[in-house]
Amino acid sequence: MLLYNTIISARHVHTHFTLKPTTHRHYKSLAVVAQEQQPPIAAAAKFSISDEELQSRGFNLHTTFTNLNLDHLNSVFAAVGFPRRDTAKIQLALEHTDALLWVEHQKAKRPVAFARATGDGVFNAIIWDVVVDPSFQGIGLGKAVMERIVTKLLDKGITNIALYSEPRVLGFYRSLGFVADPDGIRGMVYSRKQKKKR
Image (cartoon, rainbow, N blue to C red; front, side, top):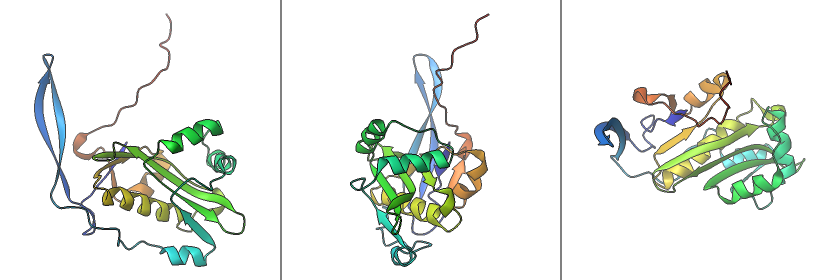
């Protein structure tokens, strides 16, 4: 799991994590506490590619899924190696998403980049499903989507932003301010794999 490092630039909130010992049912554990030192700065952020530049290159930005063709989105998922998903379940997931951004190719009228975030709306968010159609990779669309979704979350005051990443794209996320295992904190995922029978 990668966490967003909010100390990377002056336009972002500075967050410090302190570890406080706690006890619960006779087990010792550590609680992570985020302390915000200054309020988030409004979305007058400068992006690596402006909205106008994206539009001049033939792309439209969308922040709702109103006109998003889920079959086309599923095709992008499959093109990058994600499993195809039931579109009814995608619809339900999008209805429970706190922030999303997708890029539409104007000529094809199809999504070519996408990311979404879920969370508690106050402290924490996880970014999911970051994809760029392979035909459109390498031209800054992934960075454009990530910069905007992170800024949208920071503008809401959310400073604990995490995501899961495949090892081959860790460098991409690091360049955007994400760090792996900050201060030794590691993410864990519940696994439903069956134990081998003896």
